[in-house]
Length: 322
Ligand SMILES: Nc1ncnc2c1ncn2[C@@H]1O[C@H](COP(=O)(O)OP(=O)(O)OP(=O)(O)O)[C@@H](O)[C@H]1O
Ligand code: SF4
Ligand SMILES: [Mg+2]
Image 1 (cartoon, rainbow, N blue to C red):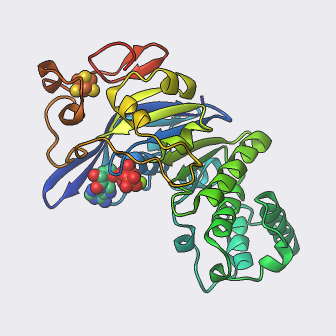
Image 2: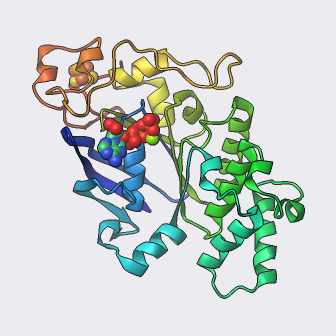
């Protein structure tokens, strides 16, 4: 196992009190594996990813749990070790590639800076050569010429590929992709997913892919982590989760799916009735209870423990397929 998130809880101090963004989240990522974290807006996906890299906003704190990378606690790293972990071991790509680039730098200049940060001994020619190779690897055509261009001269899909090239500059073991395709149209999304899978095959890089799009992620992830209200509701092999969901929330998501690639939709739409929980004032017990067709009085007494059901892990007191 390369990455293990163990009973992670993250709180934010806000004007209205303490907000419990992530609660008791556990999952693992193995070498070369693709794990999808899926859930509605506000379910704690990004905060989980930020915790792994220790980049949560200043008003947040890891209140409990641990994050382990190859048997070392990431929470114990500091200074140079933390910098190396962030750069060399785990790299992250974000949703809006346009915003991640400085508009006054050419693509070549910003890529050169990233490469230099990881390999300070390389000369100018070697850096240029490496930049070209990275752009080729993410299938940007005419890389020599493209290095001279500025961010506004690229489409969103190409900028996302260039952001992936930046992430690859350090030869990371793990790539965290937080909604990397959400701002892109459906054909471009598919191209980025194909690229990530190619990188996994070629480099054996493990990928943690965060999305609210269950149709998209279930088409290529090895395992799924379904989050709701800051909690993992279900975790298991994609085939098991799709074939036999154990949590009513997962079952609801699957029932509302529009297949990925369907012409009329870019996203799988969550059309479950009701609203997600208010993280400032969580209801006692199971956070899904107000929307759950199987809810019974016992569900509101305590947050269900996560337990094994079929081949999956599930946080629900009702056993069996849903
Ligand atoms: N700096 C912050 N201060 C206060 N609350 C925050 C902060 N950052 C995130 N949160 C809250 O933490 C919760 C989880 O947020 P997170 O960004 O992880 O959601 P998400 O699942 O990534 O949603 P989305 O799909 O919209 O990106 C939300 O209720 C959010 O409002
Ligand atoms: S614990 Fe109860 S309310 Fe929560 S998902 Fe299971 S059946 Fe529904
Ligand atoms: Mg997010």
